[in-house]
Image (tube, rainbow, N blue to C red):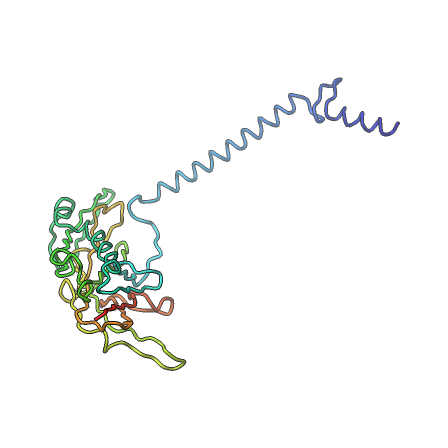
Length: 294
C-alpha cells in the first residue's frame, strides 16, 4: 500500500488534474517564470551587444590601438628554406635547384615594373614617406612607393632567369619584417644588410666559422640598403599596395661540396641586433651547400 501511495504522489506531482498543476506550478506560474528569464537574457544580450559596440567605436580599422612592438624586427630569406633553414642543390641536377628559381620568380612577380607603375608611385629617395592624418580626417588609403625588381640587378631574374643557381652563384633575397610606424635609421642613415660566416659550436668549448668558404658577396641594391622612402609602414588596410623593399645577396665563389653556415643581419643606428629575449632578433641564419660532380 505504501508503494501505491508513493506512486500516486509522484503522478500527482507531475500532473495534478484537480489543481491543473504541472511539476507543482500552474500554467500562469510557469508563464511568468519563462517571461522573466526571457526578458532577463534579452537584457544581458543587449548589454553585451552595447558593450561590444562601444568598445569597437574606440578601435581604428587601419591601425591597432595597442601593438606588441618588437624593438628589433626579424629578417626573412627567399627562396624559403625548409624548417632547418638549409638550401642544398646540385649544379648538374636541374631539378634540385629549379624549385628555388621558381620560388624566386613567383615571389618577385608583384615587383614587375608594369605592376609597380600601375599600383604605386615614384617617391623621393633617401627620406621617409610620411603621410599624416589631418586630425579626425584619415588620410586613407596611404600611397606606396615603387620597388621594381630591376633594383636587384643580377638577382632580379631579368638578366639571369636561373638566378645564378645553375652556375653555383646563387642569389638569396632578404626582407625586413613589417612593423607599423617603424622608422629605421636616424639622421638620414638607411638600414642595410650584411652577410658573413656564422660562428657555430662544434664541441663543448670549441667554436668555428666558415669565413674561408663563403667567398665574395655582391649586394643589390648597392651596400644592401633598405631605402628610407619605404618607411613608415602603415598597415595592410591603410596601405594596401605596399611593396616591401628587398635586398639581394649573390654568392660569387662559395666553396662547393661543403656546408657553409651563413648569417645575415640588419644594421641601423637605431635598431639593436640580438637581445636577452631573442638572440636572433634582427638576423637570420641558414646553411648553404652547393654540390658539383666536377
